[in-house]
Image (tube, rainbow over all chains, first blue to last red; front, top):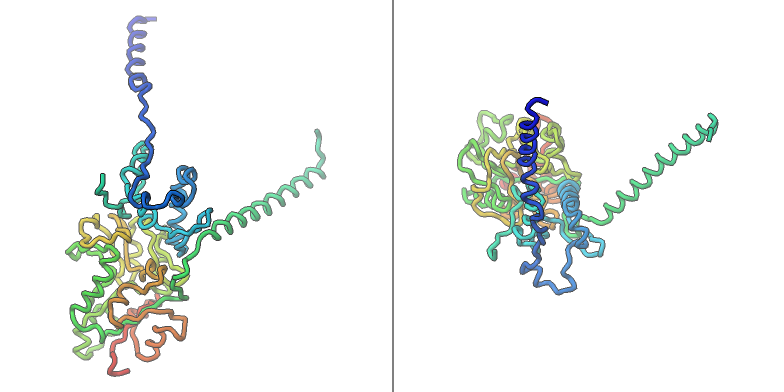
Length: 134
Length: 264
């Protein structure tokens, strides 16, 4: 092999540079954020009623599908009231129902969305609550 | 294991049958489940075809017009951009000649000729805008309201070209900085979508009449066109009315009482 030494040295340097970010950031994974639930509206609720429209696990995994379904149910099919699996009734509205309790968009929505690098465009039209406390 | 032709055909037939009926049954169960959980709400006002009658003679002063327009634009976060080119409007004033171009006779009473008319989306029974929308962002609801789904609007403006009434406005720029009184209960729009009057479908769902009707002191009447006892039908049988450009065949649902009380 002509210039074998140089090629191998070059390859080693290249691989070193190329994989540098992986080694550099190893073990430094940022912690998964915990959305905050300590808004005034939630605190006011008695302990037993401190529940979202569906279970926490369901909302964590499926809130985007739920919101998408709500959007079509309200806007296209003219519905307003959602009966959850617990039998409680809610008005389907992101701005008026969801954000009434979760008035802390920055700490509740954005934290995880930034972490997961998803950029939902809800807020280019829907008005997010004014956040004075943060 | 070998299989003869007879058994193969039996097996194929049976599995097709299971496949077809099975999916239909499952879909039926899933769909009814989803529909059972939601409802329009007990307060909702319903109709077969919503319509409006505007008694022009009852809107007299400039303040009357302003009050009605403001009632609508303030609760729907309609921006006031301040120039004609970028203007966004849901309900607005227009002169006689441009409101009723087909009926501009040579000699009309001056009081009519120089009057302003309140114009808004006509919520046509045969809406041209709905026919041309490539994404079904604008659609006709079963109650006759021509609604907009801004989530789907791609801003092609076909609907604006199709609408014979100029009832649609395009957001050439981000409307947010131009909204003077922001209403928290209603969304804004974003740059690049078309917007228009919704006949206050969000208020009807909560049992309220449209904001313009409420602010009009009885000049605007709202009701079900297919109910002979509704307010609009009573107004229509008591007065001779005009509709804007009926000749284009869109069957508009907004009627104008021109003569007013003295002829009734």
